[in-house]
Image 1: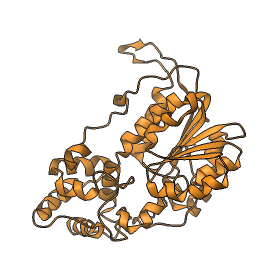
Image 2 (image 1 turned 180 degrees about the vertical axis):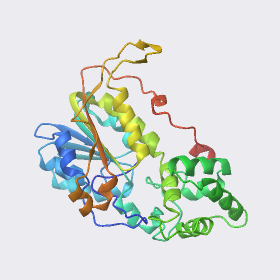
Image 3 (image 1 turned 45 degrees about the horizontal axis):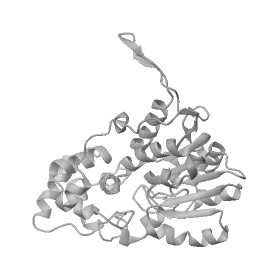
Image 4 (image 1 turned 90 degrees about the horizontal axis):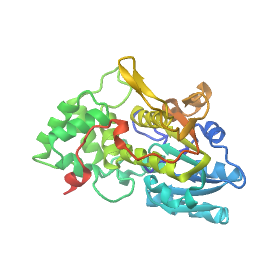
Length: 341
């Protein structure tokens, strides 16, 4: 996920709103940046969190998979004279940029960037007609490839799980019928088809295409897999006492982060019907009392903050555990390679 801190603002219809950093005070409180510390910002975007961390005195290693974000951040690299290193890569590879596993902090903002939404040519929003793309890295399998090539059964699973779309079957079958005669090429093209199949009702708060577009974006960019791998990478990259701070905007993302911290807490498991399993060493201890949400004031000022959830942990002395994806209980979905081939 090439998200960024303080960006990715969007309203319920997929349009963008003014840039405001999300949960910035909470992030800085949990991260505790300061002079002499090295913090990795895995989701640079336009540098909202990075600038705040640099202003607090820490040095920053920042990553983004979006080449546009890397190009746009060069002025900040020059401004801070060697205190900011900016790299073009997915944040799942963050351990590759950790100096001997000695990071003092890692921050991840798991959301789509407002820069990406605003650029019609990226195809993230049906509010701005453009090619049906949605690739954060601008390479690989696009949303159009998925819509035009994936099996109906795969589309149903993608829309149903990643978008939590109740009408996934009806929409998938309508897509199959239409693409036999004419492939989907633009965002409005797909959105119009969805609205025909599932008309908007007066009580609906969001456009009928919102959940399908969300599902396609998450799938095309393997956002849940990237997040899971980034959590494992942070476990390896942080020094004892280092802090991992993650801001999510979707229930699927928050569930992964919550499961990770719960799994890494090292608590014994079992029930009154089964023997207790010996507790493992905790690799993370919680920061604060758990999940942090936006205040009423911030939510009023910044609509995107309404769904934001912050979770954080402090790395212990225990060695990192195995990167076991099964702890997240994610379903098997079609692979991008299979669809793109």
